[in-house]
Length: 184
Image 1 (cartoon, rainbow, N blue to C red):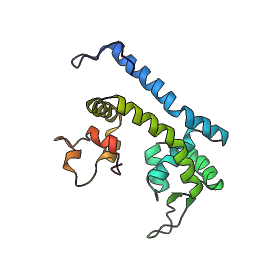
Image 2: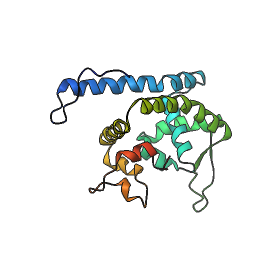
Image 3: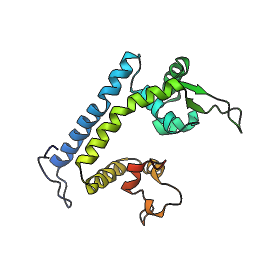
Image 4: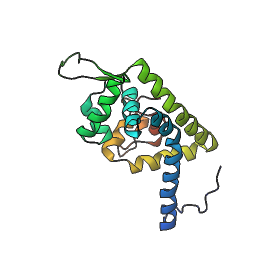
């Protein structure tokens, strides 16, 4: 594991420590997305396609409205990406069971295979980093990430009926970020 140049002082975070955190995020994200980016480029796709495929896979039956809320992109941007994914048979829209106007999104068999291929390297990378760190470090990492997410999105990581998933203030705990909304 790489030894960090400076240890963060819990009382005072100097600008240098904050900038180092920004750089670590940039480098981690670059390496985290490198293999999926390469795979997507071969298919004439990009990161927007990856995000759509990932979240439709994580939330089968998600509506376009809910997907827009998660991705925080315009309808026009999503429409371009989603149209290509539907046309190339990675995603299908089905008629809603209760409201026929809704068209929930689902990955096709081809879409599931692509999502698994794109995610495999990322799962391995995260698992390796978690194994190299202590449980406390993983918990701290998750707390930092959750602290950077808008409060409205932090609620996605709360599992109903699990009081241990909330602090006294009703905020998300770091363990939820590890498990995710679905407990995985």
